[in-house]
Length: 195
Ligand SMILES: Cc1cn([C@H]2C[C@H](O)[C@@H](COP(=O)(O)OP(=O)(O)OP(=O)(O)O)O2)c(=O)[nH]c1=O
Image 1 (cartoon, helix red, strand yellow):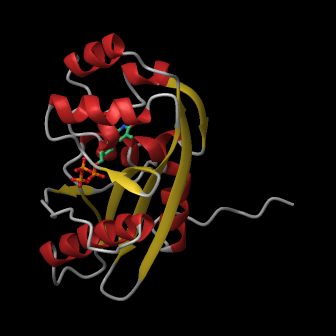
Image 2 (cartoon, protein in one colour):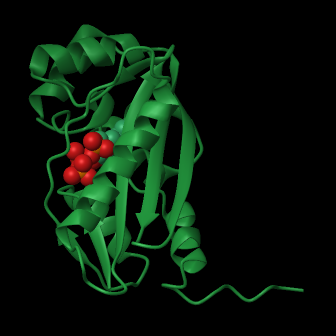
């Protein structure tokens, strides 16, 4: 049985697109970067902690696998998590305006016996945003609950001049990488080699 350790409705929708049955597990894992911890290592650690905590939830169930994921926006080694409030969201968008940032999504698939990780890194270039656009976007409410204070799958897509990477990865669960993990674990059939 596969479990998804996530409260995120987006992750649930994305995983469902891979055509695999799973049950979601609601968890609240604290997300705090440790002093001196590299940004990418932090994303990986949090995703791992989510997956491991999910496994703790279903402890003892034979054959249980748990998927956990974390997504962060990273600019100049600074990690932008989910905004605290509207001012925080506007401040993040001001910093992202006219620049290219990275979006890192780490995915861990864990069982009692084995663990696999995949990481998706995307480069996202934002157009220059003026105060009126930032205020209008924050007023839509879309910024909340999303790393960096924006959702590429919504109205913020118009800010994106260029995306080099994975659209689903930016949204929270990179589908190609997750599909590969599930195949490595034997939860989906291996892909036949094409001659
Ligand atoms: C950059 C970006 C992030 N996001 C979302 C994906 C993640 O849900 C969220 C980052 O927060 P996360 O801490 O990765 O995830 P979460 O708290 O929403 O869910 P859970 O820990 O229960 O799995 O930001 C978008 O939906 N669109 C985007 O364009």
